[in-house]
Image 1 (tube, one colour):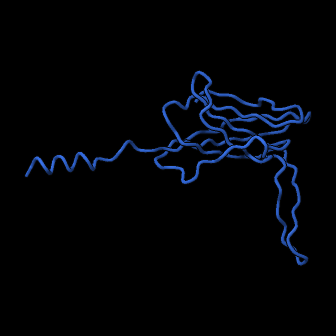
Image 2: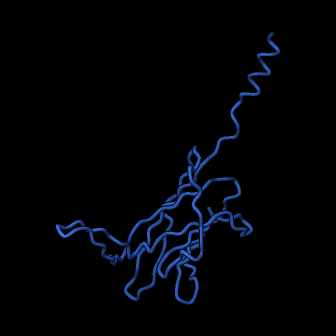
Image 3: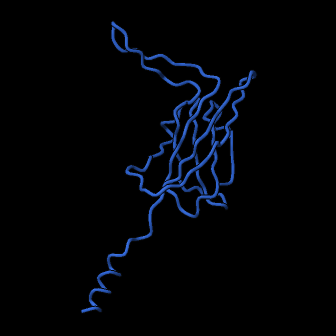
Length: 141
């Protein structure tokens, strides 16, 4: 009887916990228009992403940021698109109805979250431009 209980306990042992990494950034635009991105902090917590963000390069527009997490060797693990953080579209509710206006900011904060594994060693932020992408930031985690 004791043997059966031990087998049952080992079968119901929790699997390796799943984790999420949160990355918190700030970005500033200087007077010449160059953007500077800083990783304020990162946090790993228990949990599972309910929805894996899909990345489609065709959805990227000029001004959008592409956040990439990679292994130490540079192998890409996941990518995420952040819509133009310095020029967000704001909804305005007026008597005539809802309208959208593009705001122009000199600095802002944004964040991204990814499924975490021990392989996540590097984060990279690129900006979509007319000529392709421009590397704004890269850092080891």
